[in-house]
Image 1 (spheres, rainbow, N blue to C red):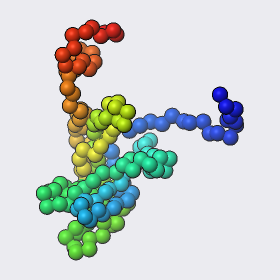
Image 2 (cartoon, helix red, strand yellow):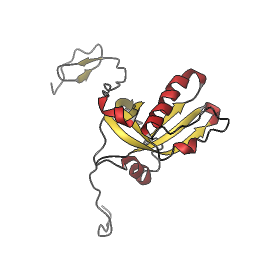
Image 3 (cartoon, rainbow, N blue to C red):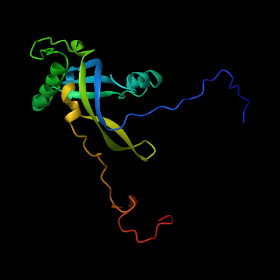
Image 4 (cartoon, rainbow, N blue to C red):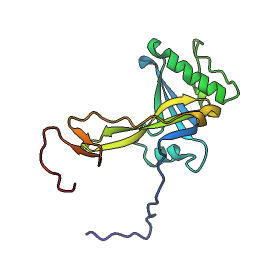
Length: 182
């Protein structure tokens, strides 16, 4: 091992990752992707012990481009969902009005506004082929209605095999071998 000096290195701390559930959040930035007709909405938890979690993550890991961000499409086919988003922002901020009907609607007026978000877990395949989980925005609600909402179940990746529900071990289809640790 090479010789290293740890005296000037800050020890890594432990951090609590948010779990699936309802959160009072604040919109921290908005980017309008005009050619694809969507807003990239950056948010952060604005209440409780995890307040500021995503801002800290983006500061410490600037390559994590989607930490605390999601897309709100304003294509014709998604306008009802976009209206739900606008309504949740409006009702969470003293009936603030984001007039998306204006020719040059200013998406930056959404920055600093509160919104209730339901975060849901979903599986994804990492670059190394591992199945991991991440949080995604499932739905938006007015902040005062957030506690009444239920959290959807985890979104699982499709599997080619089957899952043994008794011990949640993945068993590939067509395998009749015994598992060494079952």
